[in-house]
Image (tube, rainbow, N blue to C red; front, side):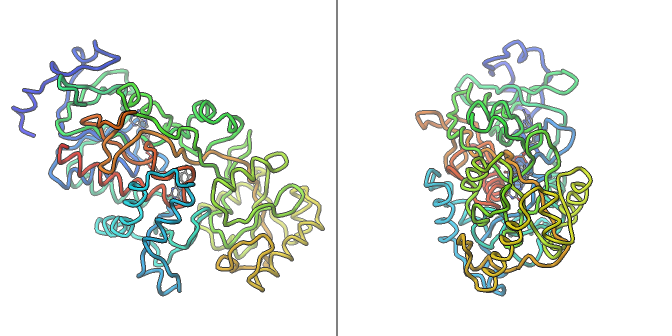
Length: 478
Ligand SMILES: Cc1cc2nc3c(=O)[nH]c(=O)nc-3n(C[C@H](O)[C@H](O)[C@H](O)COP(=O)(O)OP(=O)(O)OC[C@H]3O[C@@H](n4cnc5c(N)ncnc54)[C@H](O)[C@@H]3O)c2cc1C
């Protein structure tokens, strides 16, 4: 943007709904596009806008980039025949789209779901063009419903952040850390024209954005009070989210006339029960584990959609279950998952024994039941016919190589599926579906893509695909 144009717009023509005095008092910075949030959605948006020649500022509340993306499993859904065909996996964009809608109970915005699914391979190629590396296989993470999850070479979600932040750096994106969005600026034509920010030193900063502000501040899964406010059935749940993903940006958007949808739709996974903090992740690879309740019996197919797993866990006695794997399963997991399991044995969150009987005694389930459950499951694997109906393509591994492992599986909040309403161009919309000009959003802060239930591996995909759309559309100044 030209300096003269910025001066003409100036801060004098802007207003903020809640902090009018700040507009006059604060120091201001110029930008074409301001991105709020330094997870994968914000970084994708920042890179995409900078690739279009925009002067971009990204603000992040924490002292480092990453958000939930950094600690995520990194599983990334995409149709990719080059990897899937050699593994004998048939897939198509249509199948992916249909599964995404069916899993979401068709409460998804079909246009958004379609863009995400059909852009999945392009998004992999886009990431790879910047140096992102994936293992040359696909797998099926919990609730993913099909083997199409790409697994980054770097642990967890680190590869996305390292790749995109490197590119952002090359493109000259300016990063502000320890800086939170507290309000939005609006010009006298009613367009969102910038951001009001507060640093951890308490100082206020204004950034005027000629082309737009992109909200990519994640969901509200780190704020359990807000989760319970919208979904009281989860009042005793723990969370696996980072604390900074706390939902205040949703409230700021709502104050500026943006509709919030599906706020009660919260995805949960096996995780820490109340009072515990270490999460044992034996559930990440669907063919590798079985889930048993406190009587030692399986109570749901492990390849069920995530909402069904959540509801089954909520109804299990004591809201507790156990994930069981054998040593082959343990060896197949990433070093971070193995590390947590070893720590878990010390802290009482995981258990290990040379026999199933010994394992049953440790987790206090009737040994005869657990042994019978595993024998029946193994027979199902051999016959490719599971008593609970786990699909034959996931009946790959018997649980038979000692030592045997168990992880405590309570109910933990994993992602929030509701948030700000957007259109296909990621423009924020009001309750009446009118565009809130100048304001865009992408990633977990948005509603509509996943409907009532998210397919495993679609969270990161959603954030990359729509982060990129947001950056490009903001650059067009629409
Ligand atoms: C433990 C865990 C494992 C997961 N595993 C997977 C997986 O394997 N595959 C998958 O697809 N999905 C997974 N998910 C979900 C996925 O990680 C998220 O959906 C995705 O990372 C969201 O990206 P985002 O950029 O929208 O948000 P985030 O990555 O959470 O980034 C949001 C950023 O905004 C910042 N922020 C918040 N408020 C403000 C503010 N006021 N001002 C400035 N900055 C602010 C936050 O500090 C944060 O850094 C997992 C989630 C968790 C918690």
